[in-house]
Image (cartoon, rainbow, N blue to C red; front, side):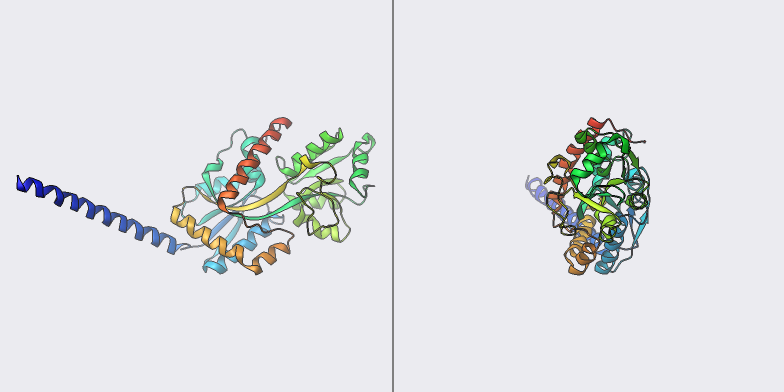
Length: 334
């Protein structure tokens, strides 16, 4: 009887010791994982060609992450299907923190509604950092006889002008804002889609397309050289980079307001300790005045948004753009 009573505590003690040893081992493994990141070059996958607004952000981020961590960070452009090819490539790589994805508002918030056979979903990725944000700017070629929004609206509404507008990709804010403007003006502008803001702006500069909503980073240098006319910006307030340009909200078009953003994401299967190591490095980058200055020189704003707030932003914008995709009947080519 006494042996029976004493055996239970000894057995329980052994189990407790085993559990403690397991927990300690797991703790050390987790710590080692975090400390070892990055243990090899890290690839940032970008879903657009080089030369647009997204590419310089990614390269600036990669350069600064390398300085903060002492590791090697390289940018790899995988354009196609509005970022879907780059997202798929990120998910096919080992989820060890050495392949990350640069996601955008249109990729995360619009693609789920626009593509009927999307081979990835939002929950496949964990947000690391909301890197930059900016309004879009409505620009025109100087040949368009309009110096303000009112004059442009009349020009667009005149069927004789056969107006068209350029977007930096189908299924993006620059596409849908043009659609909304058409609706509001009861006009019939033809949509001409490009594969990135660089070729979009190139053709507006050349006069092949008279106008379009585009990235500040791509347009501001040409606006300052009077090669493009800035008509309005889409943000909630005027941009500090174009303070003389009114917002669409000021002009009575609040429903066309939007702010685009670019962010850093990791595959959701990445171990939590490595996710935290990546986030810690990204926060150090974001806090660096020199880094912020480099991005501001590209006409970006650098937000201070927590991961949880970033997740809420994505959810809210997904609902907004899904409704617009449905209203337009737009379906992207899978």
